[in-house]
View (cartoon, one colour):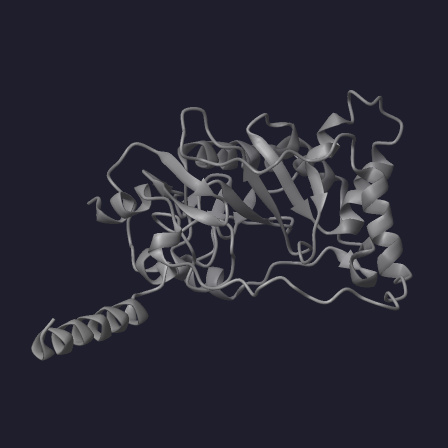
Length: 293
């Protein structure tokens, strides 16, 4: 190979490296989308590494709900999620509320978000505020500034005095829907629900299995639907462990109240820090989702 060819090859490598380093993150591609794709509804990939076609925008206001933080444009979901949410809001009305306040669902085409959640990428996750809704006529400015209400005390070990039986019944109705895979709440809420269902048979307590304790979920509860039928490219999360999960939740509460001592010889951390997702990390179908008009 001649000198000129060597120089040319070297320059080509430099240019390729520069292009790769300048490649936008996947969240920048998906965060820039303002509308859903003109495709049949489908989820591709997993809840924290995927995208979604044909998502539907949750109406900003309905007779029994309001979508919050409209400036985020995160009120998009699979048609199953929209249907589930509307029906659950009617359950809230039966419990004496005016309806439900809906927080983040997904971006218009799913995918990684510019800020916040690692999940919510398939149009199958919904954050539902814990507020006992007294009105569903908030204007856009009010929806940007009103705050969700915390239901926890003692670091999440117990519910506070704002927790009501209505919260229990709404969560029960949500978990009883066969489309729901799991619901995340703070540990004290799970334990309280277990206590309130103690007298019931195992069969009638089966819905508790889907209620899973997780950090932070005291202002809202997080509903996750299973992959819809026919979504071949969608990867379901592993099902919850057998049983109602009440003993595990109680142990979580015990650890909040009396933290166990740290191990004397903790293992060295070997896990690599999770990097930002790039488009190549997502299912190939996500390129088509982005390119669809």
